[in-house]
Length: 220
Image 1 (cartoon, rainbow, N blue to C red):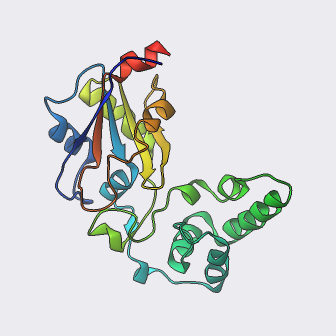
Image 2 (cartoon, helix red, strand yellow):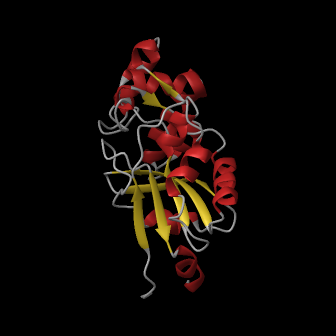
């Protein structure tokens, strides 16, 4: 058991929008708070919002296929609503998503999970349905961020820190790597965020500094 102390420091911000540059914004809010042994982590939905990757449900044209397919998703999933499923089909293709659902069902019959997310396209695991992020974007569907590995590379270079991470974390104890900088053990860092210091409501802490992570990673 490592005795290395690693602290999580949530950084409050104002509400960020597509008018914000994520690199400049993070740099401004963490100035004087982050060092060369630390990791900067940013909530994936906020990165996506600053890239303009959000849409209101009423702007979607819901198809019959989406209405049928969403019924096969657990109620807690972002794709369980017709508009959530339609938003996925609009970017990944209607028949690709429907086919992936069939593959997922067949996979479960033979004891294999995850086929839907494997074959349904990148956005299958990234889309946040309404209420999935902080107001006022809780009324939007938010896609996953574009070029996440490029974003974290720029963050690491700009801040001079040990690493940068974009993570998809929620209150259901799920913490998944969306983008990680070179040399960073992203899943190890994401595991430290399992209790969701980002928050999913009005906390407005979409940035979290993981202090002294370099020492922890190098001790493993």
